[in-house]
Length: 227
Image 1 (spheres, helix red, strand yellow):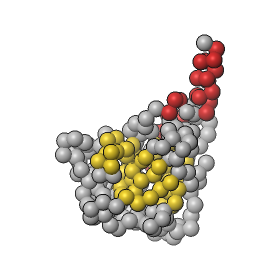
Image 2 (cartoon, helix red, strand yellow):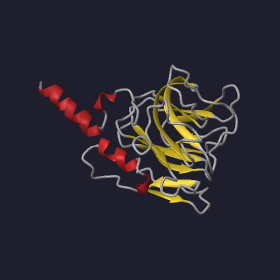
Image 3 (cartoon, helix red, strand yellow):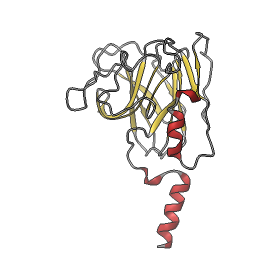
């Protein structure tokens, strides 16, 4: 009994919690940079070794998974693979140079996924929605984890049928200035002191806690905070 209790305490302290499979809202974006074509995201519950997360900026059609839900075509898909080691809760992972043939990741590996009609890799400075999800393939999601848009979830990629909710586990960067289409935004809220990792979810998914550029500044060399 003592050994089991000690192990449970150790896992809790390191943020692993037995590395259960990711669920909706277990990660969130922490930066969006259309100038650099980069993103970052944080895990709230840890990520098991050899986990694959897909990222896509093709728009979801608004139907449920298994009931006609699908992405449209003409844009791109990529995948991030966590690597051989578990990743602790609270880790921020940076994805860089998304528009190149060899994009980078600060942890794990990141690469393009080529499917029929894929094109236009990169992040648009307007009307862009990016989804992060688990799936049997890039075009067959099983669980949507989070989404981010600098446009509108009504017009530029639906949350309907994904299980995601704006402000809870998805974020609209122009929510405080509805006419803006920001090319750069980054979470600037608290990064320590919360009672548990779940307490950060509402912070990170609240655009009031982000720095959002609406003046078309140049951020090609800006590196996000990965604390």
